[in-house]
Image 1 (cartoon, one colour):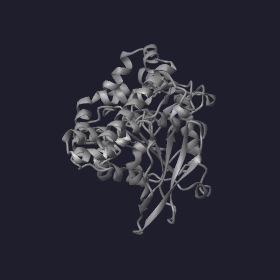
Image 2 (image 1 turned 180 degrees about the vertical axis):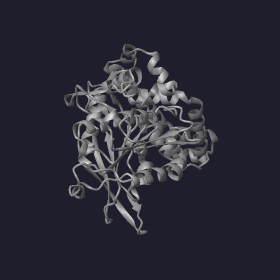
Image 3 (image 1 turned 60 degrees about the horizontal axis):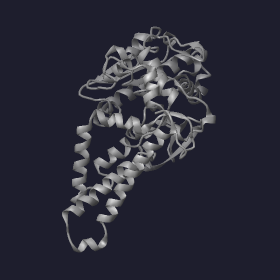
Image 4 (image 1 turned 90 degrees about the vertical axis):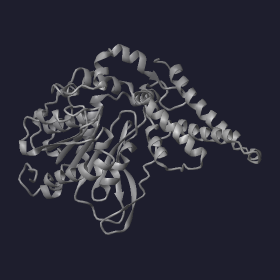
Length: 427
């Protein structure tokens, strides 16, 4: 499946299903048929509408959709998205709120590169932008990156994070969500070794597999069951001629999506059947709960093959982060060298992807960090998505994270220059 034919076949099937949906919608909506009411035509049009929308969303990057925010002054302020750093595989972007003072908390959200776009954290951004300066890693779809841009594996990902942290400065609070948690921890330790003054003020790790073997799940078991050769032969394909990244080896987003869907096929089938019924009755809207969820869920991106394979091998199989043996560019990364960055872990009690225990393992690895700078929280009843989006995040977890930031904030670089050589985090 490594060749372009396999990649183009998947894209052809997606394109064909989108066309089938559009055709069914057009035929069943033919004006002359309105004179002869027929429930089957209504159902056919509804099926076509849902099908076309679903398959069309699979290749479209969702928009952030954050145009205004209501600030503490009670006024709506425009939100502009600025690119702070532009790189081939991902950018650092800033949600700049026009007409308000710079907020005291500078937050870097590290989005996962696990098949979905950074817009998966849209609600997280919205909840923080009200009283924080929010930055986020905006990873690019590998199919759109020319082969001439080179490779991108877990070490390159870590070095990207190092550069982003250096750019934002030591008064930054970093929040890593899910997959990037172990690599963000490694990037912080790397900074602690080569440039201690550039370390962030705090680091919050949310539902990430720092030590996958601490509490095994189906995801971690899969990493142990298959060999790297099997993964490369069955999961890796080359981008077809339709995209700029033609010839690049990737783990296709459509293949990842099929894996996601198969885990809860009955639930997804029921959701789509009910949506078709709602559309046929005229009860559905463009932004109803079904469309809001699946417009994001179905929008998938390709991952560079070397990033996917190195993640499975080094993070899950070899446990290089969990065993504190990770190396970057030939340099040993010792997580114990983190001595003055406050670290907090957040886990969901019902998380079946990164089960409780996998993320909190980060605190045991921070052997050089005082206990008063360590914190953890397990959210009762929350699943994987609930710990960074939804009611659990808004009502329970976000206030705790904000409180943790406030208790561990360094002064901005200019103010810090007036202090002794090594700034300490405020208690």
